[in-house]
Image (cartoon, rainbow, N blue to C red; front, side, top):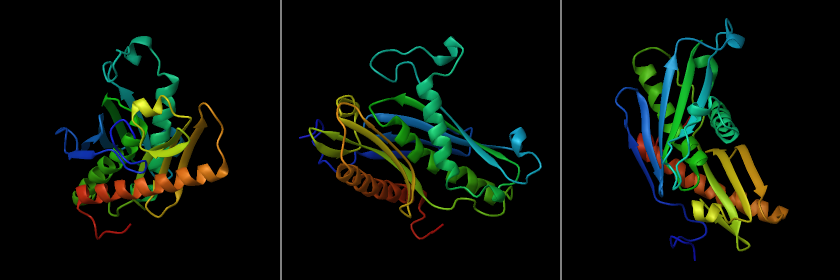
Length: 243
């Protein structure tokens, strides 16, 4: 039995609040169990130097955690004057994941900036950030379509992410912190609605795992991501829209 009574292939409860911040056109609060992340998306009329005069855009992401997002206070990274390795790795993952489903020729020479701020962490902050950031991204692009800033929706497919792991030799979906910290294998999967894999991050924490177990975890993740995309569609009210 899992600590919260879920079945092995069951997601935590997901709650999404749109327009959580009124100063930006794309913002949400995503709650996955006790993990809570604010995701925003903004568009700037410029691109990095390496994309100038190429008539295409870019997307970049930043990720951070509030000092008391966890049980023990963590100092703000700004006080140390540098971004930590974990933060750098996660924000690069978020950026890579969302760039996979964007046609940048549709947005012109503009940059989409994704900000994911964890206000409470209980495992799966990076996967919750990706799942929530997709909704914020969609919202800001819809606003740009309505006001004529862009002419065509650049999103090619829905996208979500979820964690899976092995605990007591059994695969489990959507690990909370208590499970994640004791998992034999820890894995994060990012996938499009089409079933195409964007990224898999899998690590044997205490023991190696077989190809069969890998396949089992990926299949479990695909089931969970399908359910998360249904939540995204319900929030966006786009059940009939196909990218």
